[in-house]
Image (cartoon, rainbow, N blue to C red):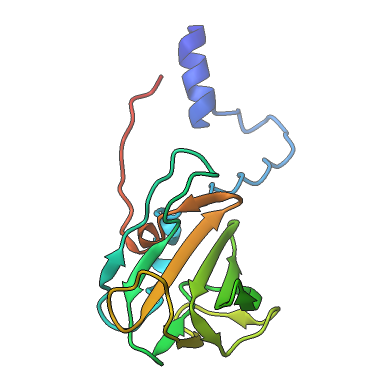
Length: 177
């Protein structure tokens, strides 16, 4: 068998071993990497009730320390419920620079943040997608309406577009080699 064909078969896991051969059980496959728009896309929901209106979009910044907008601003209803976008654990609920903020850690290394939110949750509390985490307050700088929710998401120190959590996945087939 040519070396290239053998390599392709090994990569695809297609090698057949005769039944008389004894081998240790195959190791469990490695978990698939977590993506914000992959198989878990159905695990996410909007942080506000009703249709979302973006008043300021996410800005992809050239480097981590660049000035810019690291989330999206969504038109909300003053005093309306703010909802956990996904299952996780509240890691912070309190004041940051004079603004009330809630942060939730999610499986796969994502952290969502919500501000300005009068929290109804406390650090260490588990939350599920769609569960209330507080109520929207006024006072988000630059908000062109009565109340805006600033919603952010990051993986480690990398900020991502939180609206990508709500989009269906795009499937692309790539050529081998």
